[in-house]
Amino acid sequence: MPSHVKLFIPGPTEVRADVLAEMARPLISHRGAEMAALHRGVTEQAAAIMFTSHPVLLSTSSATGLMEGGIRNAVERRVLSLVCGAFSERWHRIALDCGKEADAVSVPWGQAIRPEEVDARLASGKYDALTVAHNETSTGVANPLAGIAQVMKKYPDVAFMVDTVSSLGGMPLKVDEMGIDLCLASVQKALALPPGFSIASVSPKIIDRSRRAKGKGFYFDFARMVDKAAQGQSIITPSVSHMFAMRKQFEHILAEGMERRWARHAQMARLTRAWAKERFALFADEAHASDTLTCISNTRGAGISELIAALRSEGMLIGNGYGDLKEKAFRIAHLGELTPTDVGELLAAIDRHLGVSR
Image 1 (cartoon, rainbow, N blue to C red):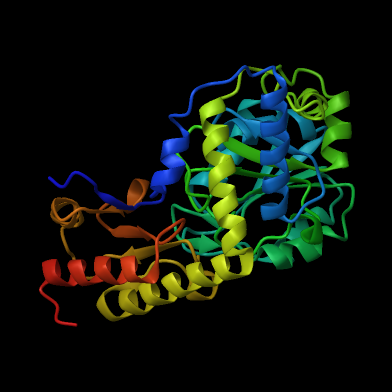
Image 2: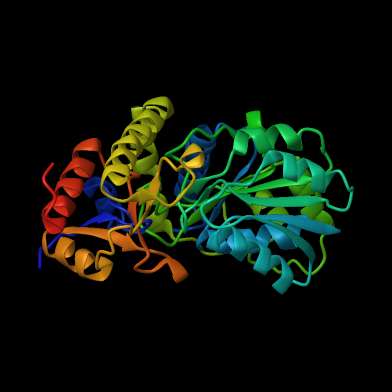
């Protein structure tokens, strides 16, 4: 088995050697001046990546924790969940598990949410919050976030909460321009960092609601987190090692430039989709296909588990279909620090195992 297996899975993804090395730096006090400078620097970098002037929260957790925090801090009456796959369904389930009144707009897997449906549901006046996954990694669907954002401008009293776990850093996203109130993401996908940390931007609307919220708990108390962040601190002991790595990786991301980074991801997506349509079929509606992950229908009846094992022996790893899609589909992630050359090498390897000549 190769010593390094290159990851083409939805996460974790490849991490630069110099970023990994930052994780091994000697630790510092999480309450000292050096930590305050690190915290402020990382949040400023994150805000630039997210195109926001809102406070940025740093959380030693996966993004699921921040999803729950969004529900507990920002939903006062009823939340509308836009569901098009496993992870958007998770946010709806979290709302119900937290005892909130919640309804779902659901579409079949492989399809995207229609902004017109969002408008029709919000027009009822029943909701004060909305959750949506920008990019659904179970299906390879990218919801039309810009269109949904235009609808949301008609409903300024509804908190617009967006899961950008697999889009931030890889697909066009401008928080303030889109009017997003809560934008959350884990760092192990298009941001290309080790898993175990997440970030979120929070608007004044979210902060105000958090200050009023009861039963929101301590760990994900957004108002408390914002107040502490103003001091360059977190409310709990953070993963300092992750923050060293984030500082270095965010330097790389900003040096590449967001427009160039988005273009690189779009190029990898085009290569993958063109190959998939020749060899198999796209699972997602192509009009809403993701630029960071492609879900491919197994129209050839190939043994996906066997293919994954064969590729792994060559030092590459792809993902099987998620949940009920296992063996019926497979997923190729093209995000983070991967390049079109990397994608081309993977696709050539799959062709060899399929016995297909290019």
